[in-house]
Image 1 (cartoon, rainbow, N blue to C red):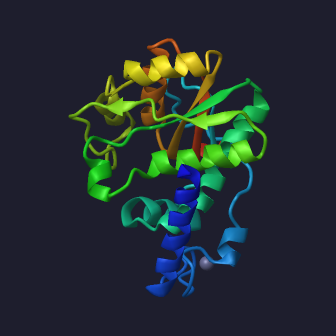
Image 2: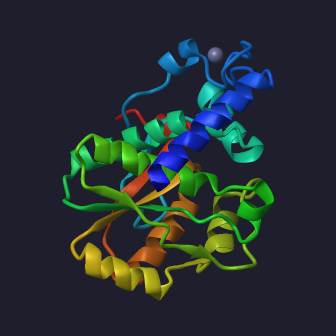
Length: 243
Ligand SMILES: [Zn+2]
């Protein structure tokens, strides 16, 4: 029922975008928020996206594509302007990154854990974009036969600043100890998925500081983090000659 109402809501959002005279976020063509031509150019598989420098101990990070052009416009339009019709295409990108990671090291039942938004950010935006896209990505992966669920297991503590504009060192300091894993959902999870491995999910991988903090919070309560998956990664992650 939840799935049906979610799908219905997405269909309605798409209809509203059309009625209000939307345009493609990639090429500005009038019509859908993502035209068929731009959709056809999106990545369909994930690849490793190690930041430079790598935060010590970071689990293998995978991303669908570079944070640029249409992909960047999609992430921003969905997150900041609530263009919810982009949720499906963004979920497909995140699912591609997760699938790449899981194909590299198959690991049984998997739980996708979205990076939590800062306290108050979801309320201000009217939605929690990363959590919503992660849930949709898990549905896509399940429909492909994989044993994957999405659980928003992490919470952000108050006092965390907006990361944009901060360098790698400041980001790490801003985030240190900023996330935690409350015990009640963990107990339910332990009962339902005792051997699960965990994948931290986020929209954009920049320095890796945010996902590393999420990984730390999960590992601090004894969970095994198999990797990190994001829809996009900033350019330098893809410049390594061995990729
Ligand atoms: Zn387009």
